[in-house]
Amino acid sequence: MLRWRALAFLGCVAACLIGLPRGAFGQARGAGACPRRPAAGSVVAEADEVRSVNGVLRVDLDYCDSVEASGQKRYCYLYEGRSEAPTLRVKPGDLVILSLKNDVDVAAHSGDGKSHRHSTAGACAGGAMPVARVIGTAPTAIGTTTAPGATPTAIGMAMAMGAFTNLHFHGLTLAPVCHEDDSLHTMIEAGGAAFEYRFRIPADEAPGLYWYHPHIHGATNAQVLGGASGAIIVEGIERANAEVAGLPERLLIIRDQELVNPDAAPVQTDSMPPPMVMRDAEGDILNTGTGGGKPAKDLSINFVPVAFPNYVPAVVEIRPGEKELWRVLNASAITYIDLQMMVNGKPQMMGVVSLDGIPINSRERTADEKADDGSAKNRIVWQSHILMPPAGRAEIIVKGPAEGVKASLVTRTVDTGPAGENDPTRPLATIVAAADAAEPRARLDASPAPLARPSLAWLGDVQPVRTRKLYFSEKPHDSKDPKSPTDFYMTVEGQEPKLFDPNDTAPNIVVQQGDVEDWIIENRTQELHAFHIHQAHFMLVEWNGVPLDEPFLRDTINVAYWDGKSGQYPSVKLRMDFRDPNIVGTFVYHCHLLEHEDGGMMGVIRVVAKGKQADSIGTPAGTDRMPGAKFSTE
Image (cartoon, rainbow, N blue to C red; front, side, top):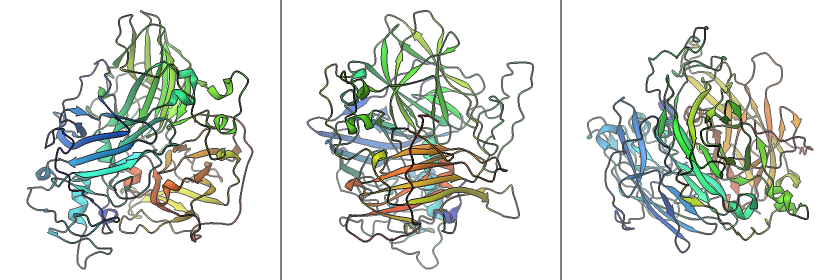
């Protein structure tokens, strides 16, 4: 639920424009609508790919919108005017030059097309570049404070309806600055000139699956629900783990959207009546606790819809008995996925080789721990199901079933808590094994050269310099009306809880580049939350106070919900890595349930260059380094 006071973004907004002409890279540009998406039951097709050439990836994307027959709003990234959400394939060290043109329908987002006009005034850090800002109904130059008498309503409405956008390159270790991965100040206006992102993939970036999506505070949820997302693949995972060398690779992106059939009753599958549909203050369907019932959102897989109530599954075609590497992205705005492959009704083991873009054998490669045959370096964790929060990624080895065997890909029910959204068990795709099935378009190198050993010590072996505690909390916006929209908070212990305010980007936390810290994240609410931080990865070292030995890195993790009675809140302890010099700057951490993020559940962190004085904002004294126990994907 959007609150205009949280949308009063009157800070230094950088819609930084290089001034390149439209179509500067030879691709068709211009206004257009999102293409028609596949019909239910379609064969899952992979997105078109754009690959780097001679160390440079050049791509023009048009950000467009349309309204479907159901009345739902769609947002999309178009490549060459027709191809939706292209997969960007890069190598470590590549230069990326991405031109983004905001071609949403200005009239549709401004009421009559005349109420909100956009000026170009001000500057962006790094050079004089035009920016745009509308205050009230008249153009106003951007400053660092609110203009006297200005109201945020017009800009808030424009942002909420999608008239502004930007890009966040989720998981990549990029600088949080204009033209790279700044989501605090970069806003690209509808109908304006194209904006150029220009950055280099770090030479030591881990090979794996990353993604891009908009990150405009107050509008992120709507834009991602509308389908605005795509994958980034940093190539070379076979160089990190030889077990996947030579395998065909398949990309599967799971997205959510508003229910196409919101008034339909659940299909009754047994003698028990379907559970009652209850909604929270934001209108989302609450968790039933039954594993069934009406979901809060519909799902799709590579844009093939799997809609309530009939859940007609998509179709994945594979050759019998063939091993493939599946790169799976949960690009949902708010829906958890608990992925499972079923053959003749029985769960199958899936071999996890990477989580959140980082190969799971990173510790072994760092410490050079291996048997004589190198087996430890080629670690695979076999799981019967994989829990993926919104924004989570898993790269897994699967094996095609025998021809004629009944097989499927499903998501199991996820208990999101009594105040959480309903994520019931439902199918995603029927897996059809056929000898003539077309192979995925990409195949990994069969004879890769191994990756160089990482230069930094394994994160789990580094003593943290301090421990911090942060917590999720919620309360009704109107304290006298418990049914009023929810305010969502993410607070550093010792600070006053407050909603994220884009007009105030003073950091809640300041750290020095080179430091490693432990963060305890508590959940003081009765719904599941997913903690995410930009620019960095972390290691899970404790789950509800129990030490773990989990030698993997992530950028998004679930924090279990509170039962409302226990004296101790659920928590995770994370070892946070601020050693990479690329991440110096100011960026955010937040819940990756995007409705919560838009509703205020976000904070700001500043990483200062090594040798500069870091403030001690929210920094209790003390360190806490714990031994570990056992791996868990949950």
